[in-house]
Amino acid sequence: MNKYINIWLFSACFLIITMVIIGGITRLTHSGLSMVQWKPVSGSIPPLNETDWQTEFDHYKQYPEYKLINNNMTLDEFKSIFFWEYIHRMIGRFLGLLFVIPFCIFYYKKMIPDKLYTKLFIMFGLGFLQGLMGWYMVKSGLADNPNVSHYRLTAHFLLAVGLVGYIFWTILEFNYKKIKSPVHSGLLKYSIIISVIIVLQMIYGAFTAGLKAGFAWNTFPLMNGLWIPDGLFSLNPAWKNLVENNMTIQFLHRYIGILILIVVTGLLIKLLKQPANHHIQKSVIRLTVIVWIQVILGISTLLLFTPVWMAVFHQVFAVLLFLASLHLIWILKQN
Image (cartoon, rainbow, N blue to C red):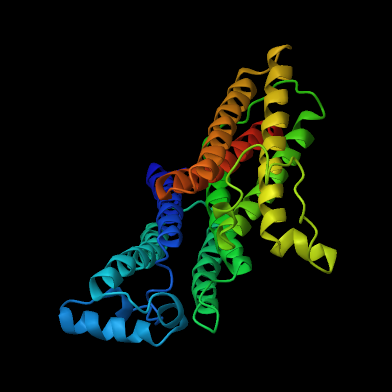
């Protein structure tokens, strides 16, 4: 594939991960509801003087977050939260331009391989849905309850992860030669299961973030002094505990993470004990290193009461872990 198209797609991956970082900061600094109006074009221009800032602040004052939580906020404090949401939205707009403008240039110069068009249109679709879900998420916090829906937050995050994963897989398909070597028949299925569990873990991570469940039960490995705390199934019907009970969600997020750590480390130990393709071993080692870093970050984030920088790194390493699992699957599918 043309090197300029590679640079284009790699740049898109980098920008999406940057959006995940800024999105995490936006959420953790409680900045996400500071821009109460949706103006895709004119909204690109920030307030330029004190009058503009006061007008923007007056708009914010009409919504529940100000009335119920931030009614003592000053204009300078408003500017600080507005900054992160503004940057997050601007990166989203820039990402859209990064897709469209190079595509038009490459199309005009006939540089795009025919079999790449379908994949590019899928990327455009995912990117559009991700932006739409971002506003739909914000909208949920502009009603009576000044908190965004954790379901919508999760969907917004997963669409970003799905988009970067799809671009990454496309890059692998178009740039790397197939690797032929004998592989244990169950290894590909095992790696797919690992990837599915990682996605499940990201869902519960987003639930934990959306419900602010990480600010409670800040001990490890015990919760409330117990291995299995009371209250895991306090909601009725019982299934609601899996998606709305803060304690249950944090509990599952903890132990799904430990499960991933065990299965990935077990896979590495197994591969190191028997002859295996160098590319496969290298990919599993990378996956294992990332999962250990991710678990350490997760536990540290919990024990330190969710410092912003650490929580953001924890979120980014979740994306890197997912990409590493995709890379392993891709290598194994070549056999």
